[in-house]
Each structure stands twice: as structure tokens, then as C-alpha cells.
Amino acid sequence: MLAVDTGVVEEWLSEFKTAPEASIPSYAKNLKNKSSLVSSLYKVIQDPQSELLEPVCHQLFEFYRSGEELLLQFTLRFLPELIWCYLAVSASKDLQSSGCIEALLLGVYNLEIVDRQGHSRVLSFTIPSLSKPSVYHEPSSIGSMALTEGALSQHGLSRVVYSGPHLQREMLTAQNRFEVLTFLLLRYNAALSYMPAVSLQSLCQICSRICVCGYPRQQVRKYKGINSRIPISSEFMVQMLTGIYYAFYNGEWDLARKAMDDILYRAQLELYPEPLLVANAIKASLPQGAIKSSKEGTKCIQVEITPTASRISRNAVTSMSIRGHRWKRHEQPDNASDATELGNFVIPEISVTNVAGERTGNGEKSRAPAESDAQHIQGVQESPTDPRIDSKSMPEIRRQKSVRKIMEDGISSPGRVQF
Image (tube, rainbow, N blue to C red; front, side, top):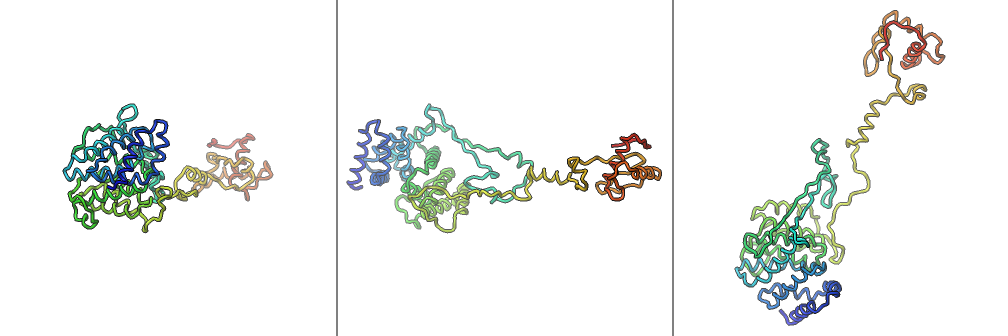
């Protein structure tokens, strides 16, 4: 490491210790603009034999527990490089040179698993429903979903996955190593939108190195350093893919594509189903060409925008369509002005025993009335009780109204009236 880098780091170490409490927020705002300091700190972390490594790790931990959000994010940007250095040293069996890095990782982990009151923290994640749009899918692109009783019972219900409570750790061992590192990478992914480009580049590079070290692909990538294989867990690889997926759309297309190919290569060798599923899903969703996005622009993931126009199919079963179908079924033709006067109310058909036959509605054939009853009805229809009635030209409803009027006038008829 050059003397210039050493001087920059030493000045940074002394500056924070002498800074008053009231000036911490302004100090944190100016810290992210010091690119030379960030470059020097990366060189210190990458050198396990550096004398400045221990005070740097101690300073980063002080930043993390200070409560200042910008200082916390400053520490998180070095987390991928710290994880790689710890795993590389652990693979080389030189655990003494990684003591300060291990202490920093454990300190951050133990701070994150509890809240401000010291109680164990339980993380929750709501799995999105396929019937509702999210940042990852549109229901219309999936196709028609059957409107079944099971689908209706599950509509509106959400499944929540919980993580925790996590146990505090005093040291990293082979049994709990990736449990701690997976949680730390999860915490890093939660702050991805605040990470600068250099941190995303470091994430992609260490993911490739971790996956191919000790395998034939290391010679293809021309990675120097350790040649030992680094064991990793399936959950840790999924968290790596989460960060890489973000890097795809934020100016690091080439590095992210290389890292994803290496993770997919390692997942195939290890036969891990979860990383294989996630990696292939990301690969299938990527556009054909590289995304030309500015590294200084707004960081986001491209998603499909829900259009303002309605996408409801004309054949979709809705409450309005059911109501309209009911109206069509009960709708009767308006053949006379009296139907309008009655407010479109259909007068029920009056059937007189041994006088009128069955109703002619619904396609049924009417039966011929008895001879005496037919003569009686014909005589009634010819009487000038209503000048508008004409049995030869008016529809069936006129005859029904005539019969009812005769009954109201007191004319007796054989049989009994049935409604």
C-alpha cells in the first residue's frame, strides 16, 4: 500500500475521534464524497497483513453503532469485501489474520438481530399473490385464471414468512458461519438503493470469486490468490443473486452477468435447487441486449407499468355481467301502451278452471278450451266493456285484462279462479 493511502486512512481515523457530537451529521454527509478515502480503505481491507486493518475495522464498527444512518450505510458498503476477505482467510487456514474482520462481522450481526430495547428481532416478508400486480409480474401476462371456489377462498389472503429470532454468536465456526454471513448479506440487500457503484462492483466480483475458486473455471476467469474451494450454502447463494439482480439494472451489466453465470455454474455442481431456480428465473427475465443506463442516474428495477385502460375480458364473470344476464332473462317485449302505463309491470296470467287452458309461455302449447267455456269467453270479448279491446288484433294480455274486468264487475263464471 502506498504512503499516500496510509496517510489518508490515518487522517480519517483521527478525524472522527476528535469530531464533536454536534458535528457528526455534517461529517457523515461529507464522508460519502471522499472517493480517495474509500479507495484507500478497500486497499487496507484487501491486505490481511496491514497494520491499519484492526483500527479500520474498529472505526467501521463505531460507525455502525453510532445510530447515524449515513455512517451505518458507509460501513455496509464494505460488507461484500469484508465477507470475501474472511472466507479467503478461512479457506487458507490462517484464522489469526482474520480476527479483526471476524469481530466486525459478529458485532454487526449481534446489533442487527435485536431492536433498540434489546429484544430479539423477527423479520417478516409477505409473499405477493399472483392475482394482484406486483413489481415482478402482471396478472394479465400470466393468462386467464380459473374462477373456482378455491381461487375465491384464497383471494385477498396473503402468506407471511418469518425469519428469526436469531441467536447471538460469540464466534464464527464451521457450523454457524454461513448462518451469520447470510443474515449480513440480507441486511446489505435491504440497503442496496443506498450503495454506490463501487460497492456493487465489489459485490459482483466477490460472488464470482467465491463460486469458482478451486474449480476449473477459476483458470478461465484468471483469478489469482487462493486455489482452495470455499464451501457455501444454498441460502447464501440466493442472497448473492438478490444483489446481483439489482446490479443488472444499475449500471453493472457486464459484471452482474459474469457473476450470475458463475453462481449458476456452482449451483449446478452443488445441485442446489433454490439458487438454480432463482438464477434461471433471472436469466429468463433479462432483456436480449445490455441495458444502457447511466451509473449516476436514478437506481431502479425496470417493471411493467399497469395501463390505465381496463383489461377485463368481455367474457369475464363479474357482478355486473350476472346482473345484466338476469335482466335479459326477465325482460319482456313492450307491445302495447298499457304496459308502459303500468311501469313495465307484467300482469300475471289468470287461468280459470275449465275456461282457459295452460299458459302459452316458455314454448308450451295451449290446450283448446271446452266448447261452452269458449262460447262464454267469446261473448264476453264481444261486449263493449272497453272500446279499445279487439280480440282479433290485440295480444294475449288484452284477453287477460278483459277476463279480469268481467270478474271485477261480478259476472260469475264456472269453476274457481287460479292465480
